[in-house]
Image (cartoon, rainbow, N blue to C red):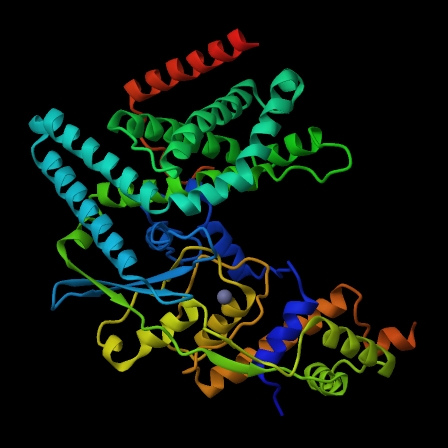
Length: 488
Ligand SMILES: [Zn+2]
């Protein structure tokens, strides 16, 4: 008899924390997230024949406005007969009307940009006039998306900016002694300084101050520079770790430098992906279709009842471990007591399915099957372990193979399957969770099997650098450096 998959996820969420066993499949997904590989909002991976579509992740991400844990999934369908491009949006909670309105506005700007670029390609003599218009629309895209997502952006800034700034302050006096080439170290210094200036503008925006057009222009130049520096620094796979270890504060773990840079550039990279998608002649076709935004209706909350006694947990554990891993009774009793302590059993918990899981049954429904979806699902953050495994179980049915950009290492609780999960998917999912739990417990020595007991480069094209913007940026940074020296 199978265990209830929800109870197995509860077991995994307590037993396994921050753990990911990277399969080849996951490694491909991780590659998809590498910002240096994105060109025009897509990645062509000729080695794996997988075609990730980061612009969909960008669209999902710019739809997030809340500082709280809002997650959004987006699927794309093209209906050639009806001349429609359908973006189906699902959230962990109900999608608000304002989110859809925002998506429509962003798409309209992408269409305008694409049309202007197209005209410019057809009539190069209009270059000056057209480039002014495209610049205006690019700034409109930047201000629209930054304003909508400012709470989310400030949450990231509040978490990562001060530690990065402090790291930059420790870096400067010993820069000459640090590993890495001089140009790379200069790039890092410039990056921190640029972020400092950009941060001031974002703080003004977060308290409701009006940001003028020239300030948006400055923000774009600063953050474009930061992303260029990031790509160069990330080309060296180890330099961030080497610098972080060298400048470690005694008694603390090394600063997660690469993570901080990724987090602080996330929003801007998404905006760049949208703009480069609109700039791409190859992908222009997408903008000739009429946009139809679709919301996945809010799913009913699913009730789950967990074991309320240690004896019930013992039965769950015995079933989960099966005959393959015989264990001692003492171990079972200790684990069961621990589970009762950590999870409040007996009460009925209710939760909604996470967005990527609720999106797929919707896409597979009869009405949607007439216009099959792209198999790449855009997500505003990585999938949790349970969702990732639910997706794997669904794909094992042999129909369309849905993919996201990967998973992080966490198991969330309470977590529920979409109510319409087919029984074969449910069974496979329960088995995968069970196997991951067992492997984790064995590999970390938390569980001993019976035998142990008896034996006691950058692949993407660098965007063209605007010479004037480059000059402006150099002057701005020199000005800031001079002001600092003067103050000191
Ligand atoms: Zn999830």
